Length: 419
Ligand SMILES: CC(=O)SCCNC(=O)CCNC(=O)[C@H](O)C(C)(C)COP(=O)(O)OP(=O)(O)OC[C@H]1O[C@@H](n2cnc3c(N)ncnc32)[C@H](O)[C@@H]1OP(=O)(O)O
Image (cartoon, rainbow, N blue to C red):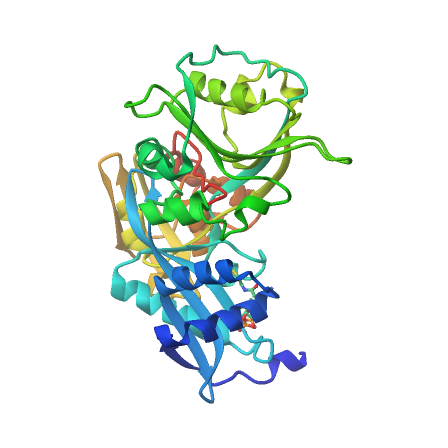
């Protein structure tokens, strides 16, 4: 026991009214040790204003904040309303006394009231959210291309023209190409024009924009003739060489509809004069780039980390909303301590036409926790990895293989670095 454990505080949970947005931001900056520029604060204010906002109060004073963006998440075969948790902060005077726990309970109530079967987040620390039933559901690679020499490729690049466009025109031009990725990969969010402008392209520089580690203004290159939906595009910034560092290209987003289109964009980015390295912040683990290069030593994976965590708030709604790659009929014994309404023994019957999730008394084929189910839900980590790790129990030999085959997706789920 530590002194942290002795006093759970009585927390009054209320909506944070618009008049208290600045007070809420002050608490967020206190918890995250931030001192943002005025335009960044204004950007955060607008983001927070659009969120569902939970305030924890102790003796009338704000001691905790949790906010949820109302987003739509792509899942295999469809899309689901999602509560994307953000701005989670508890005053240092009130930490480890159950404030976050009570805000999470309120979040579940709001998800049920608003019909949001899933919640998601980016974790500031990986140790926090598993206890609330979140599992890491998408993963991203950091990649570096050695562009001091031409990028050697095994496929012929798409020969259509590459054009630099005005970033202000990008939301309208890029949206159709991006939207096509929603059906291809789970783990992506639908975007409106404001989300493109402020969040993805950072046109006003409120997210750090023009001065990210010396990288300059955002550039947008598209592949394809004017008037047609681009076959691909890249959002990037560049930095000239300094005394102790090479000139570099920083890729923030790249989408392409075919391997030749991707090859054309990667070749372009790796051939910009006065740069000798291409840094890519977030790519899917199954990025074709890793295979289409002729010399794999030219492309290095420099980091690998969990990206988005998800929580199946309404397990039945989430499971019956996704598509299934193969028929499966199994009994699952599901643990869910944070949301016991999901817990129990259920028969999952699924095939490519749909799924049912019904309570049963039959003996289970598998026992698992809701957080492992979350990690596998989008087609990310196969459940057998958790069997190997001793976290999922297989009672019927072969059951986990059958469930993995049904959960599998053609492409791994991915959530980009700028979402
Ligand atoms: C989606 C996002 O916004 S991520 C950002 C999260 N916020 C931050 O990192 C800002 C700085 N930190 C904070 O504001 C707070 O410490 C928070 C929000 C992380 C935790 O809030 P608290 O009110 O202290 O959490 P609470 O008391 O409800 O703890 C619940 C449980 O989580 C555990 N826990 C809380 N924080 C952490 C942590 N950082 N690492 C590991 N475990 C943690 C507690 O020990 C407790 O465990 P128990 O149930 O076994 O006793």
